[in-house]
Length: 472
Ligand code: HEM
Image 1 (tube, rainbow, N blue to C red):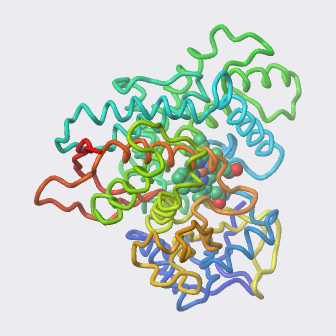
Image 2: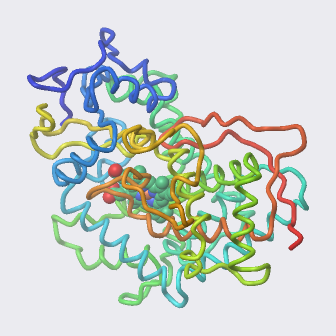
């Protein structure tokens, strides 16, 4: 249950709420920026009234490390918000309550990443094959302006498709693309004012209008699509010889048949597949779209990337993960994109598994916790001039790549991103394969907006770019 009492004794302070709706209206534009500003007034740990239930917001690296790392077990639940209950009944993987069901689903998915990622061929080889489809498709635009969003989404989603379904989908598969589109719209709607209102007043489900209705319609279509596709890919399954994640899941389901406590179910399979597809696609796609935009915006940085690629790879050799060590500048650029662009600015909402004490504040069991990852990446205690895009902050004076402590794009603790390793491989291989071949520039006379489109993830507004073949 969520904490309904507004301010239990010793609870962190926060901004004054408006009667009934609390602080919900303040979250309408750039909630991560609003929360960072509030932390300057109320402290790194403060609370918000979200219309009858309270949430604790963690800001800055110290507070987030204190809770997610030093009290990892306590801060590892997901809040039982009406919206999440309606969407996934708190089952599946990403939204699952902390406990046996989550452990089993996380383990199964991470085994699949390891096993199906390296089945027949190592995963980096498979990513490189997709990179070739990707650059061929870019080449078809012949240096003319195009919006890279769909192409990047298709290419990136194919890596999770290989693991989940054992197959890639062609870039003209409209049904799959439509599913991703409406799923991604839901990632945006899930943090809209209407979603917060629904969580506070679930009876608005019966209002015939409101963005939450769109969210429900989209979810029904997505689950229907996933059910069909799962049925299609599970045909021909042979027990003990799983071909992909779906086979592996169904084998587990069969083995646990009759066990009343099993967390495996057809429904949880659909939720997990959906979560893996969207968590894997939306995030990595947005990172690459921001990276392309910033390369065109800063030609001097792009030139340094080109110089490094030319010296390590030349024009013929394909990049491989082994080259990463010799490409500190590329690593620095990708890290700075993740820091500066804050792909998942507020993480994924957490909840406490038991009553706890942090920095003198009492936080009861079941409290919703928001991790402001944006505030970590703009934490002045750890970053000099955080509002400037500067890959150099990840390099030492000899040009070697240096890890930075207050860098948490994948979050921290027990619920930290399951796909971090895969995402890092994808970003490096897609980025280097593309930049080895193309010079990125905006169509003459245009500079796109840098204002992000708001949602659970931050993505660039649609923009056009020209990918001009390089002469090396
Ligand atoms: C969770 C970021 C790529 C799967 C998360 C969380 C963040 C995140 C911030 C929230 C963790 C928390 O609760 O504190 C990112 C970023 C990515 C990326 C920035 C790419 C640049 C991926 C990929 C996959 C993936 C490629 C899988 C295909 C997941 C899953 C969770 C998660 C399953 C939920 C983990 C759990 O609840 O146990 N990610 N992610 N992510 N991510 Fe990622």
